[in-house]
Image: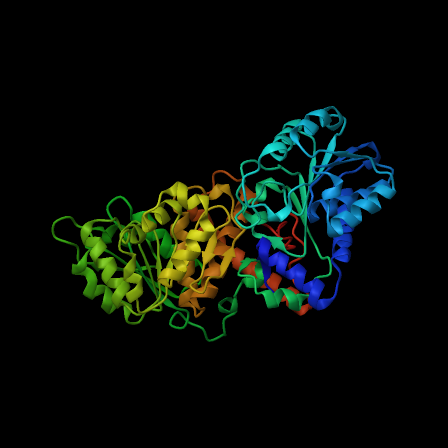
Length: 546
């Protein structure tokens, strides 16, 4: 089963179906949630009897989870005060039921229905040295204002530990953006399924736990969440275990098109990455004037000197017939790294997209060349995989980089669906958007990858995997995950700063071997290799110490 990431409305529907169709009462779900939250809370904070706990509770089910926690924590003799950000008479349903149970235990409650009440409660809040955030939950859609904004900023400024229930208050559950202000939690627990916001807004969640509260698997499947987190279970490594009679003619052949004066390294790295991921043969199409440079640089890669435009020594329509002929026996084309974006080059790329009937992985200048002319994808004869960073995505869409970063999920999905392409929007928690509207988020990778050439390597990895027989979809999932994980292994070995793109290329064989052995071991033992996540974007893979 995929590691689903749900929206707030999907989670609400899953809860509703569990209650109404399966027959598990909401009060039981809330009890299970609050009890598991206390267990995780106690595991994260030792010497609980020395803590002075403040539970910040809202009026909805998030507050109800907090009331359940208060009951169980009261049994530990903890010094506890519940700060209720409404009048208790306004509580409804399961939250009201659990509030009344809690009150029977004489747990102290301070009601804060308005800002004046909050001002009066500050002296009491100052006596607390750890907070449980059960304020706003996953239903938040608008900017945080009033007393909620003030208490979040006050708690963050107190520098005391904060434990978030379900999601840090102020973090958008669907988009992972901050709604004006947001709790910075040291630890977070969520229930049933991870929300998209936990992954994208990981830095606000701290340590992380996903708790099973009794939701049946078949109900989740019936809701069909459209987002999922890439894990090793998404890897397709069939190409790694080759038959004994495999040879270079059976392990794929790709064509790389790229390079320009001063940028030959980009297409060289794409070619080398494809070789290191196992592609049998790589032919690099490079402008005739640059061919000698690449022939000397690349020992295992074949080069194809291409006719350049007479006026500026760039690739253009003059090279098309050579490229078309060279593509006949290839299984994939990688195009764009270091290519430049001259007028003639734009014409060449547009013609290739519309007329060459094999999958293409497009990066860098291939994307820049199509800015303002993305309708060419509607005429494409094969699957196209686009790998933009936010700046390239902005040029493709005509938006600003800031606009793209404000809602990466929405823009990525819209573009992929509108143009029937697979779009990889690179960055922290890289987004993979498929033409059918599904979204995969990737949690591998680290800030050490903020150096030139990483995107060129990813392009070569994906093209090299497609060449070995995987579908474009599976190649993208596997390639993106492996690319980031190879960099994660380097960060653990070398430190997070200073490794470069060629280091990632060289780490690919050992990373493939590691995953192949791990997956085979897990399969032979009848076990998965994924368990509950300890950070929102990185499930415990039983791999991270390798």
